[in-house]
Length: 65
Image (tube, rainbow, N blue to C red):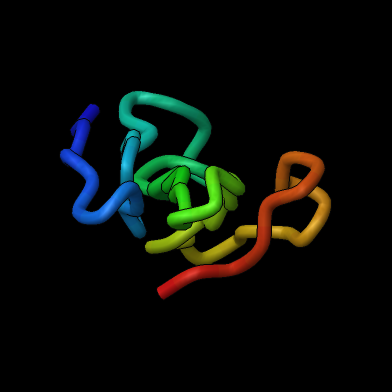
């Protein structure tokens, strides 16, 4: 898990967590929560492993790079 300090009230990857020792279909995926300068949060899932299905995205999360 990583926590990144905001710059000007915003942080693209304010919180980042990599799933480890889990089901191979999600193992290694990175959950990233970002915050813009207006305080609006976003969620992206990056480094999705082979076998990832769209149904694995938590509500409100999108694909990231």
